[in-house]
Image (cartoon, rainbow, N blue to C red; front, side, top):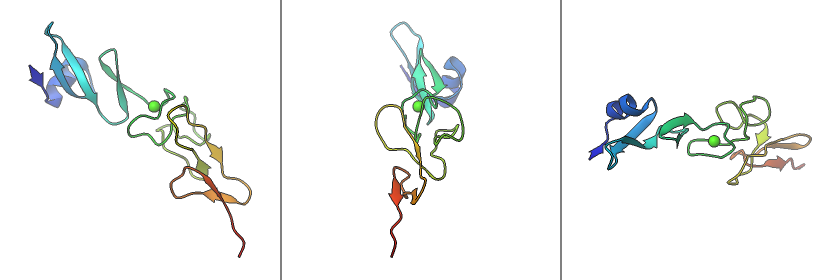
Length: 113
Ligand SMILES: [Ca+2]
């Protein structure tokens, strides 16, 4: 039996579960979560800080410390660059004659004209 209303999912499983169904043991199982959340042990937990760049995150450097390039909500902070890879984000500050690229994935060298 497919159950896909938010109310049923959140009542049965907890907040942030968007879709769910019942397995053969009649247990409600979460199928998908709000953006920024991942399923762990049938609960949707906030995925920012887990060290993986999940759906809805620009970066994830395994912590929730502001000022290191990846903010507490897993967005890239101003004047930092966080290259994309599938593992932990390693952000660098754009210092010297560099500036943050539009996609926030690299520091771009300033060019003198
Ligand atoms: Ca994450």
